[in-house]
Length: 323
Image (tube, rainbow, N blue to C red; front, side):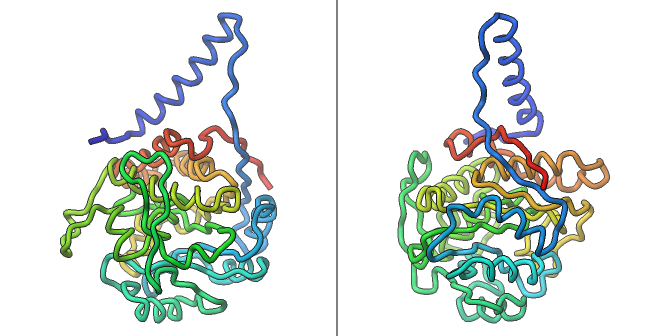
């Protein structure tokens, strides 16, 4: 079992990289430059701001486009503003919002219940494809140590490209939910894929579900299946707004956010956009950061970042471009 990935280990790894570069310079050798990715950022959390960052990454988005959102449980107070999502969807020809049903019993457990929640939460302004409505299909997990394939909603194969639009926030099991988690859990179908990722037993005892670093690794491998499937035709947007320690799957039970709204981050690199989001959150004043950091680190959430790097799912070194 993997050891929990703490903030101390997270920072130590970064310091080691800097030290290696410095040593190379002292020795007179030309340092090897770490590859970097570009992450675009705007403080403007609005329809205009969302369209501005998307314009920087939309080059590969064409054909039939899936916009992966989190529909949330009924009346969730922190869900992404519908006007923002509508503006983005209307700017992308031949697009639809996509989701899958849940493994836990709630307002999105069955397709019928999920359709009602979609209407309640105001997502019915355009087509919403519940991708596992007609079952699931296995796709490869390249280079995984836990999975060789992952079960995803069958309808995912109907799309040429995917825009991963994520409400970045804390999470009861994942520590935090960024773009990686959005596709790791959100593209896996309810009955099979989500059960695989959670290593869930055949009962409703949620306390027996996988937790900590092993769960983070399962999520990363699930996400890798979707990333590999779309290749260059998948892009990522994190909206750092209403960042409760709880996911939108908590619905009205979600804890009130203590952190300020920060902005919108976008990239063609999954690891870079989630790492940039974490870095930005960790710069918050202690009073705003404390609860989020405790939630992230108590669940070994930073293992998401380190394992994505191990699986070469992007760069944790990035250039932040402010718009």
